[in-house]
Length: 299
Image (tube, rainbow, N blue to C red):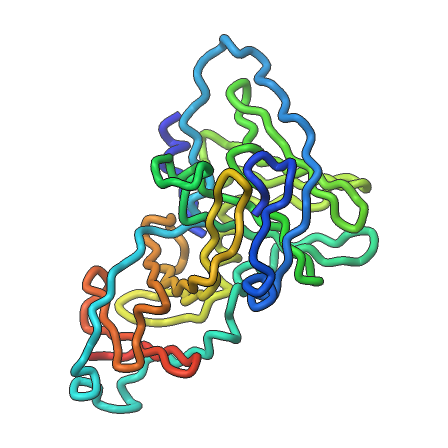
């Protein structure tokens, strides 16, 4: 069972799924998404509650990120910055904002709406604090091409033999879609997401396939290794549900994806026009953010 806690899984519905996650309309409009309510059936009970304790299932690490890194402002950045030739990549952040919510893992409703399936991780725990296992922070996200996002708390849809049996129902275009994850203990990265709709199975994909597709939406950056650079709103959860915040995050994701512990996450507000470096990141590289353009360069 310990293999489940080592799953290769590197990368907002309400916590009780009876009400939808709310967010300030300005934040969501800026992000380009809205949140819809999700109708949820009861989770099936384990076949035999006395058969054993549920394993410490942690299948979703492809969808999260590691600890946020602290920046050191480069006050003398202009002296060490040699010129355009030292810029490794320049990114218009608006062009990739929350793009990870629309990877190429999709299904289509009977009304013709395309639905993208991705995964993400809230910055905190279901009770609003930070004293919980990482697995309690993961969400699967269903995002339509109309800009609606449905967030499903990942640990509530895990099926692992007699130890766990769960599913949630999402209603899109007045059609009901049952979402579940079929855990594969011997190879957790091959655990499968299954979505069934009114016409049968609408989508199956492994968690690794989804995690790789999410990361692939980022911009390629070649340093000592290859990264995918992503950008989006922070997500937090609490007793009343989950929501986007105004805090913007920049992620550097080693690619191909290994797991969330290898992600690097930066608070975009820490990256100054004068330049910033992150001591816990690769040495010899700086970041500059001005007028919505992010430069990664050698220092």
